[in-house]
Image 1 (tube, rainbow, N blue to C red):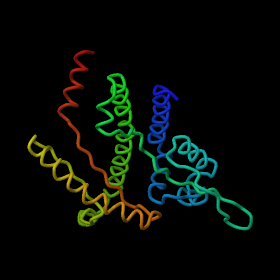
Image 2: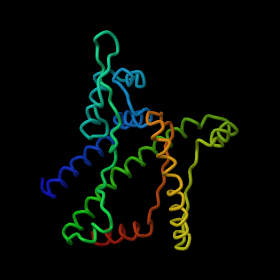
Image 3: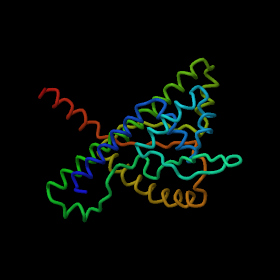
Image 4: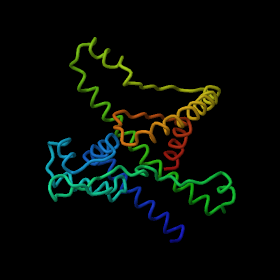
Amino acid sequence: MTPEDSQGAGNSRMEKILGCLQNPLDFEIMMYFITYRELTLSKLEELIPHKSRPTVYRHIQNLLEAEIIIEAREEKVRGHILAKIYQLSTNALNVLPRYTPEQIAKMSTKEKNRLYETIREALYPTISFMENTLNRMFQYLQLLKPLPDIELFETFEHPDFHLNMNFFTDEQFQLFLQEFEKFVKGFIPKMMELEQKNPEAERPYIYLTGLLPIRKIIDRIMIEKQLG
């Protein structure tokens, strides 16, 4: 397979991932897989009682085609009846290529441009995933509206919730990078250790973090508008 063929295959997969992220039921099923790691069709039916078995199965196929989940194995459920065990793929949303700085330095201009294009395309699934997750959070907030203020406060006083938004100066940005690097170096090894001890543990929490160069984004959008 040539690099161009490889890039084409990657783009095709990214399109399928985006399709799943933008489909409400695909996204709901994906979140269940992120939480439980392994599920059968029957278990998903229990989790999504408002949808029929053929509908749930069709959306499982969407996730399989996007390589978000895989068919892990088959297990006997009763007698000689086998059930397929579907599992979250280790590369569920990992569409970014992996290269060291040394490898990138040796690339030709054409290879670098192709790599940058791949990275740019790969950002779409990440942003779409965060957008969908935050949209669910908004729906949850809407459901909480009828609650008395005191109950609403107690809900978000619980450590389950941690939402933050900051606008940084250049100096604060540099400080953030320094401190975040320390956090990652301390947190990731411990997280991986726990993962190895209990790889099948349920995942009822999601941690999202993002740092956007908003000034660059706005400036670029404004330039494109002027050119258009």
